[in-house]
Image (cartoon, rainbow, N blue to C red; front, top):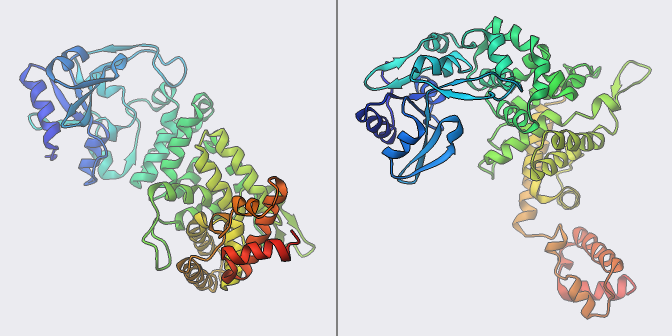
Length: 458
């Protein structure tokens, strides 16, 4: 098999080979190239020691030199070059206690996680595939290199990575690997929240986020996301739903796309898409706490959006998500059930309550949520949302005031008219904003100052 390596990768490999060292592209970049996907990074493995690598290239960075990794810079582009290594004993379930360098490519490949990530390639030797990674690529299988229990015992994060790769590549997970994942699921407690969050979000933004349900079935989410297990254990005895809260939420994740469902917006950025998928997963997280059943056997979940907004803040803080993600996702969860009316005055009120910044994301979430409902509950909803979006665009096109920053006066204007600084000043501005939301034509400095002095009794 021939793989087309980038020119700079070929140059680095050639320089190492000319100086008597072995060198190969290795790992995920080889896997992706074989699948016809564009590799995000090109990693190189070599028999040269770090100092020997540094001696051959004019610009290098010691990015992980204690583990044998040097970043080689060519025309300001960085490529990680790592010495063949053998890992020592893993005492914390994540990091080897020591790393020793080896002259054997086979020893280096033997320590890697999955067969599809344990292949190396250069133009001279072709594909080095000691564990039938190419065969597993053809079969669509994620399988540990060697003994699965040993690989997961070395690094428990590999358990979650197996499900993430399954979701990204649309591969099944080999049975022995699945058994080992279930057996060692508790060891994920040793993994930092940041790394759990990184793998979880990669899985969620993949093409097959529903693979999280397989992680649930194998006891993985019980360790890393017990809230999801509660969702899966919560039925929805209601005509609007065909699944429990957990599986419904995964369907909403699956229906959440980077493409905006209505005209007038090209799509979401990578960061916005991540927020959308997280909000889709957690939009009903409050339902287990809010479930009641009436005398006819129908379930109700009054107040679940507000409860969910508070719960998701706790979950995302536990996972060490950034503040922007925590704030945005909790707001989306808080308002995901808002009763939108496609009328401009009602839309201005909604924009004031919810915030203009998350409106497109919120409508994308609502569209996905409706798509995951039972018929006929998903029939009329999307058309109503399209009308809501059109009303939103109309309000925005006229730059109508829906927040204090859009108000034609500010605190300094009121102080100049004799108002005293303090809480009362903020109340007056809020009252003026509510007046303008009802009657946008009043958003002029002259009119607002008149209203503040006369109508508000100041």
